Length: 193
Image (tube, rainbow, N blue to C red; front, side, top):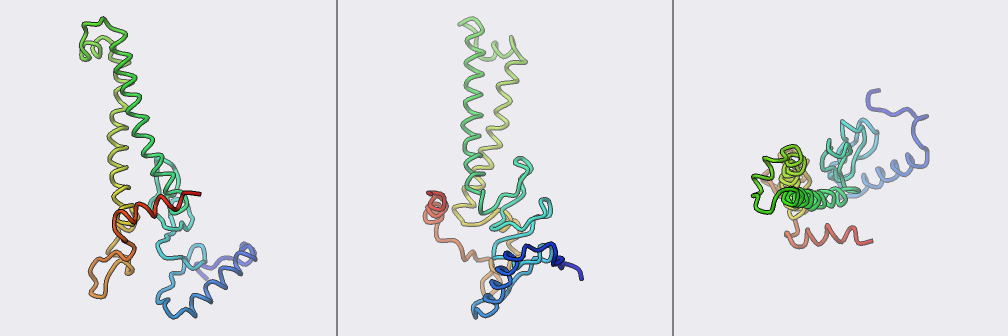
């Protein structure tokens, strides 16, 4: 049958735990929809998704990042946002280092533009980090906005597809949003340990 995993490929202990969780979820009266991940053969928790690129089910799936060549989700989202934030400062420091180097390598009376014309290859090497800086700022802005709304990139893009992001009238409603400040505090509290 399609979507079934062979018994010899299932780790017995893990599979039994998942089956037990599924049985308990069925008994829970508040459970209305249980998404079965057909590919992995498990009950998919809320806000998780099977990533077609990596072939894994990811908890609190955000997106597949080609820059990192990895799925970004609940377990590594904090580190991804930290990386983006660090990239801003790294790019800015390379630009400042480059401008300083160009100014020092030319006579004191030279303007920055004259320094760039005198050493265009070095200028390009240092100043192309401006593209990284802009890209990192835009990505950071987007992800801090999502953190403030307690949404994932996947949920933001596909909000009309997810029933849990709709109210009783069918209009968009985010049940996870506790206010920008609380969402930001919750995001940083998860990673205090």
